[in-house]
Length: 90
Image 1 (cartoon, rainbow, N blue to C red):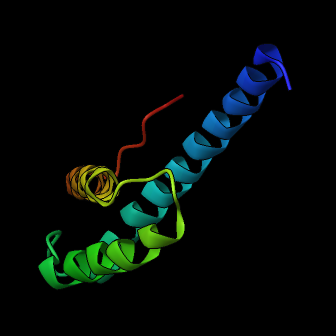
Image 2 (spheres, rainbow, N blue to C red):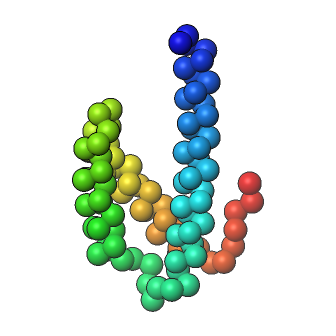
């Protein structure tokens, strides 16, 4: 495998990551209709605990990185849920 092919694969993975994050945030927005408040510390704690367990399966991902990443994702999910029913246009 050469550098060009490796980078092409990385680019495809990056696009998949963005698609999945976009889908996750759409679902997070929908959850707001079922919640009395945006913040759900128990749910967030459960998610981070799951990440701690799952990250051990992946040799290249440090636990601290994964937890920081998901903390950031959860923060963005809260921000999205706080928005009024406006949608960002691409």
